[in-house]
Each structure stands twice: as structure tokens, then as C-alpha cells.
Image (cartoon, rainbow, N blue to C red; front, side, top):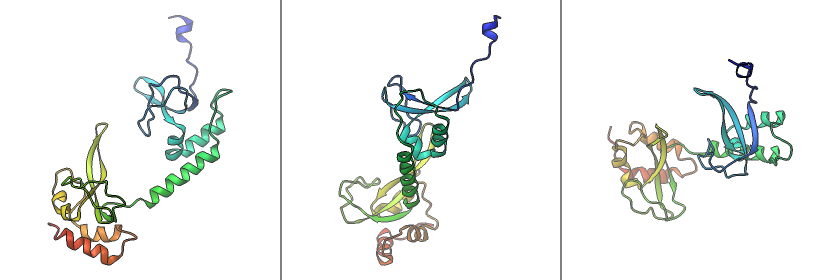
Length: 202
């Protein structure tokens, strides 16, 4: 083997911030395309074929991995002339994401439908604006893994949906969980929703 072949490859930086070189890469956070020329951040991983970068939109990375974005800024892992968003703005995005996550309710819970556009995921009929709907969890296959996602159902459809094979909300303890998770809803209204739901099979 030649000396050139034996020469060690230069060590890759743990992060890289650069304009996307094409429109083919996808953000590993939101799964959407990173448009050519848009600033992106790469986070180094070592895979079966060697080291490489997982690319993210700057805002997506800030919302999910602010510490790594801050470290990349401290290391200044971009070339001269690359336009980068102020770190202060990215920190604001991260704070809002954390706040939204903390305020996100856990299924099962009930809430008032803000519009009349949503449909019940069990019967397919619209859920009237201003009426109460129940949020349950349904298993969804994504990238080869099954994850639980929220679905909206009429109170009268809850029992049948709980019996569905892909429903990941457990019938056991349902009533107590609905009362606990339905923060901000008057207890009397929660009781009426439970009455409309009817007995939960054990």
C-alpha cells in the first residue's frame, strides 16, 4: 500500500454548520427536506460505514438539542461568510419548545374542540365546535418502530376505540386518568363526559 493510502484521514469535527449543498438531505428532527443553500447543522455520528453527519435545520436542532448547538457555536464550526442565526434567537425557540412540552397534556384527557374541522378517528364523523372530545393514544408505525400518537374521538366512541387492536390507551384506570389529565376542565364537565362515555370494560 502507498504512503498516501496509509495516511490517516483528517479528524472530523463533532459539528459542522454550513449551507446545504443540495436539496437532497433531510432534517433528522422534522424529516423534511433541507433546501439547497439553507444553513444546516451536522452532528457527527459513527455508523457501520464510518463517521458521518446527521443533518438538521438550525431551528429544529435548537428545539431538541440546544446544548449541542451551543457547543457548536462555541467551537465556531462554520466557514467565513456563512450566515448563522443569533444564538439568542435559538435559545428562545428552545425555551418555547420546553414550555410547550411541559404544557402538553397526557392521554387520556378531554378538551373542548376549538373548531368543527376535526373528525372522530373512530367513526369518521366531525366533532362539533365547542363540544367535548376525548384524546386517546393510537399506535402508529414510523420508520420501522411503533409509536403512540394522539387521536380525537367522540365521548360516545371511546369504549369501542379502547377495544381496538391499535389503541394504546389502557382501559384499566381510564376514569381516574381522564380526571387527572384533564387539567383546566371543570370537574362537573369531566363527570358529564365520563357519563357520555359509559362503563369502561375491565
